[in-house]
Image (cartoon, rainbow, N blue to C red; front, side, top):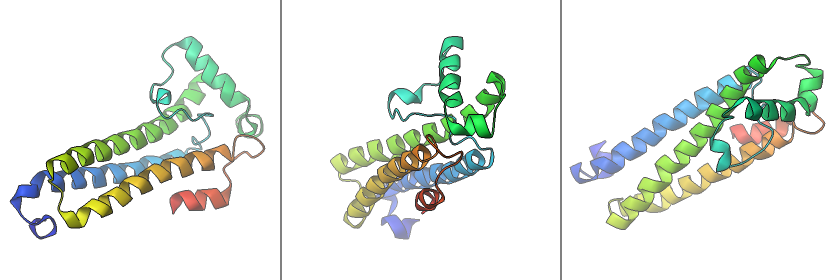
Length: 166
């Protein structure tokens, strides 16, 4: 690690990058579980900020469930699903999206601080900026993929899934 970051003075930068890599690994695992459990379409809207909070009461849960019941996947694949069953798939998709937000914050905020403090080696500044942009783009692609399954399909468009998996 010392060779990569150029010495002990950049240990915080190395720890930050390693932490972000672990979070990305967690995202891949949770994303895989979300896909395998068929949970990806359970949240039918994209609210990058306000969507961080899950339904907080019975009325919120009923509203989220009604939105899910309005998409073809419910009618054709999960007809008769109970609210409790919906909550089971909802939590995986919510965790997946929350982890995406966490990764964005865990990368962007320290990146800004390290830039101000001039702690990032020059050779990493542009690379980290590109990683930040690609991370944001991945979130947009994820929503683009999910939106393909909300109107006529019962799953996401395979070509959009392939782009999202990159």
